[in-house]
Length: 181
Image 1 (cartoon, rainbow, N blue to C red):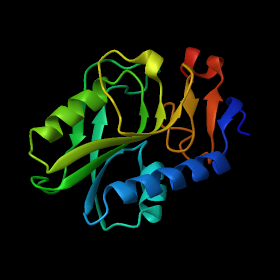
Image 2: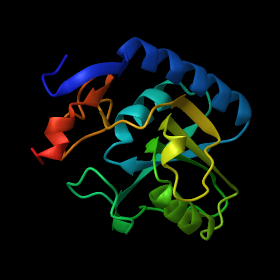
Image 3: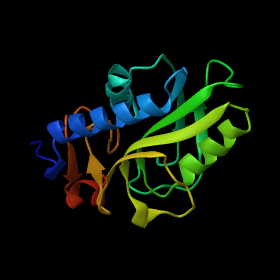
Image 4: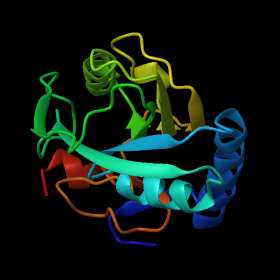
């Protein structure tokens, strides 16, 4: 376990098992269709890659980079698009892949933006969900785990761009983000 992590919340094996379950359900739901996975950078990449490898339906992938946190531990509430999609999504079956749904503000903004681009369908998929932190109504169609209101890192999630590479989801020690390390 990394020295900045207080405890492991979800092991690599638990994550792998859940991603397999989610991929099977998504593959069934999208049988006969092609999916465009839109992954929110940078946190969603690990989950999206694992999910994509387990899907049994045709898949394209594109990326958006949005920010509402910066180097802070809490969302600013202001969403900025750092990188938009490379191709139009009109008429496509879009699966928006996110690492964590926390306040819901970023996901609400992005999903509204994407719906305005007229996809054939738009569903939301997240590996982690913190329903007690919600500041706006947003519902994911596919949820891996509901987790407690703790600051988590690993499996793509970071604090100040660190800890994304951890193969598990761990609770960050409070003194790390309280001091702004």
